[in-house]
Length: 319
Image (tube, rainbow, N blue to C red; front, side, top):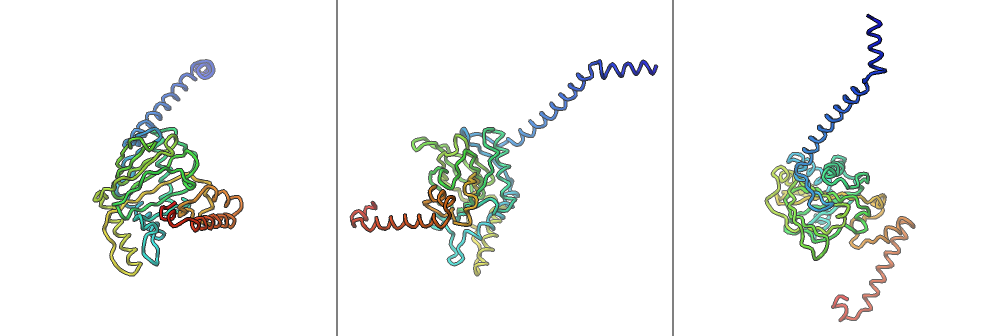
């Protein structure tokens, strides 16, 4: 009997079809994992839509509690840098905005990691995003005056990054109408972005024209509005009294892949250069900050000399 069972055991494992059973078992496990992944992806893709090739909108990426937490961290981080201590005004006060563009390493980690999560979710709908390129810089844009939006522009400046990795934008506060178009003559596509929504554009849409046309007052979630009021009140008290206004606002976080700017943030506040050029950045990387500044100063002197040579008539015409 022992010999008979030994023969059966030997035949099953070495001469039989045991490998077919193993293969069938492996296929069942893979199928179960694949179905589980599909169910998870279906959940993650709810509210995710491709509105144009390379443009993905993610609705309700964060719930109200998460929005309040992230918004508090960003407002506290931003207010220390937006507001001039001497005047109490925002650094972009003419536009009614506060603006901070800096390396992601200088932001709280809880804020910086949101970018990779957004790219992962959006890649389920548009799998052609460059996911391996690290987003290096974050623009924190605070709209204190919701009567003013942002005109059409492209993110193709010298500080906006040079690759096709997606621009990642996350909104808080009042809802807005976000407009997109490829060329000046094209009719714009309007997407409403509520608090907690995100939009990503990369690849064929990396340099698409976009604008914030209208910011809708009274649409800020109550928990986010409460955080905003508390941060304003704390900032007002630190400046010597007063109460924070419970006014409408919009806060936008925009991540970009711009590794060529790494290390330049401390040598110059590049995010305030209204007319920064690639030449300045290239000169600074090659010859140093002093040489780049001397060349920039010489260009400013040349421009002043040219203006002095203009006739009053030409000067009045703005030529």
